[in-house]
Image (spheres, rainbow over the protein chains, first blue to last red):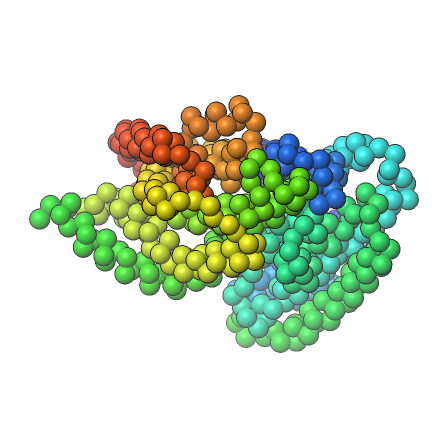
Length: 261
Length: 270
């Protein structure tokens, strides 16, 4: 209950902060719309030449782009800015202030920074997913939608744990900001189903940078091409990464001596 | 000695300084590169899949042709790449432009030297990656020797054209405080009309005609198509003409915009 309160508080602070720079909302809206239209135009060009891309129909790929924006937005609203803040905190020593607070440190650092305007991506992505679902018609039932929600949540949890572990490395390596930029670049490859990629890239996008779980797998659930083993694997990976990243965070914290100490 | 006569030695000094600087910031270099590489790989995979589902070919491109196209695209994109228009806003706002103006040579020489050094350094990575792509995706090149030869001037003109156009675009920062929206619109044209998403022949006829009239195609797609052997002698000559015409037009524009912009420029805190 208290954690939810903290999350809410942090979100409210983020909103108050963002409201000081209202023009940024329009800039974000413009950028997100352009990004989305670009993605849809790319799909139009590809499907101008074929009706089937490695077994995926146009509506399924549109749903994938929707999920790509949705997940990218969710990461951009709180996870990525908070992790950037954490790395900066380790480098500058400001993390000390967070650690002295009487609440769980992992929770505090994970919701520290909220970029409210990135919610535009979440909303646009959700709209595209809904439109794609309507296009797909009766193939999507309540049961499947629920499974989609569950897998999406697991996917975001996997990305979160992965980024937390990367950021925890800052306790040893200090200068690591670039690693998040590399993640952002790899994330772009998630615009298309990972199944299209050659094995080495598919493995990299599943194991090294686990974006396959957060984008392709949820959409596969939605369109009903997911095998139950993949579903179970995703949930198991999500839970073990959540536990593992928490352990790694605590382990890393023991190595943190503060920048000024 | 006039400043023009001293240009070669100025460039030589700038090259040495830039190499030291960029080697020191290897991390940033790697990130730029990764961004430059991931896009062609993604579209190469997508189009190879399309070609396979259409019985091996779309628009005269087979899987091997797509591999050659996107490998060449990556090389041409890297060699023509500029980033100044992304940083000009910051340069103007923070006053970093002022010291450049105090020097006795035009600031564009500073940026040209910076740009060429970046390309020289990054090509040591792009080269091996290109070989990797050619081998993994089985690229096939069906061009004749003269077409490969014709590629060289096409590439050189494309480098000049893209640099002049994007540097002129960068100067917008003298008038607009936030250039993000303008840059993104330009980038969008670049993405679709220069052949980065797909070879232009796969677009609807209308889009192809627009691409023919705008400068984007002549910056990337034209050298790539030349090397691939998709253009006849007449097309290649028309292409050179278009490139030269656009370079001339962009240079005139650059002079006009520069003169007007420099009068407006006042750094923050100056």
